[in-house]
Amino acid sequence: MIAEKRIWILEDDPGVKFVYDEILGIRYKLLYFTALAEFRNALLESPAADRPELVIADITLPDGCFLHFLSSEEVTRLFETPFIIISSMDDVDALRFCFEEGALDYIIKPFQKSELIVKVERALKRNAAEPPIVEDPWGDRILEKLPATYGKVPHLTLKEHEILSLFLEAKDYTLSRHEIVKRVWGNVKVYPKTLDVHLYNLRRKIHETGMKIKANGLGRWTLIKKA
View 1 (cartoon, rainbow, N blue to C red):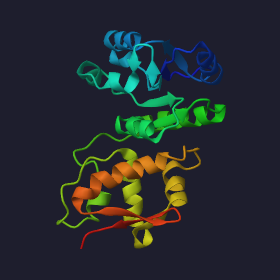
View 2 (view 1 turned 45 degrees about the vertical axis):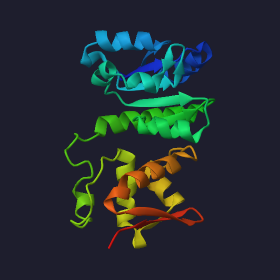
View 3 (view 1 turned 90 degrees about the vertical axis):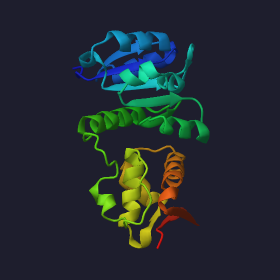
């Protein structure tokens, strides 16, 4: 039985489309686009109620880059759907760029069937359970741990928020790579450089508040709070 949840997929390779049909086609309603222009037209013409719960996009399509496409003002206004990037690029800069642009996850081709299923299910569950956006993206749990002398708190992504919360709650504000991955991603397989990218972005954002995340070696980090 096919679920009611809709997934739009941007993919121009017929072979990969076959894989999606085999893995996801029995679980969700799939709609394919082979070019960004098609996808854009669908966004413009579809009422909000008919748009998907998730988008899976190859980062590079015949008529451009999906992430650059999302930055256009017209598309930004319409596109609020969570998305997963699929790419053959095993590159930390590409990964960092994807997360900075709002990707929920990043999957490298060729991927395992189980990896795709787990990450799609996780993204859909997160979207369904995501709380409404509030003015304070950090939430009371973090704010109450920070002295009033701290600088203005920047906007954090959900993952950055979770990681910073873990540091603030940890003994001596110190965590290992294993602890962070296990508590933030659970049993989901995580691309090895994913945590490095999130830590890089988090360190850059909290610098202005007076906090730093210092690498201690052997896969451990410590959050240093200003006096």
